[in-house]
Image (cartoon, rainbow, N blue to C red; front, side, top):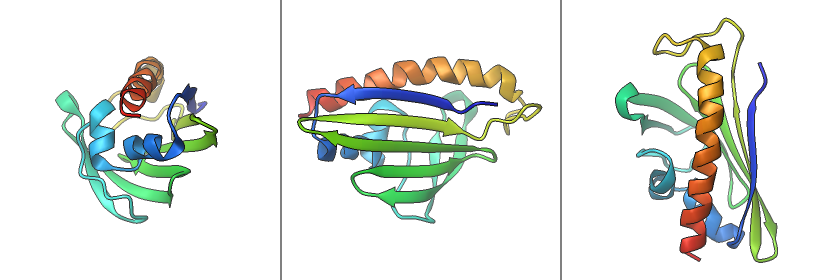
Length: 135
């Protein structure tokens, strides 16, 4: 199955956008409450609302250009930032989808992926709004 990929340009400096993808408080402002520390190998939890807590592990930190983490038993999430003058290009990649796979909550990947794809469309817009409001 294909990765979910979202690309957006945010009217804020890369260092400002990093605060919203590379810190626990920043992620919580637009995504989910969490206790993430941006240190490779560190485990943390996302508070996934009605689905409960999701275990995660930071796999890449390259401040202010990239942050990645494993999410649950299958998924991985990457944020790639590129400074473009007074703006930042952000690419979000949500991978780990498998035909016949199921989430730890028992939902098939082929059912969850389209729902998550639409969810990410709204979430990157929310990230854009909060980052641009803080510049």
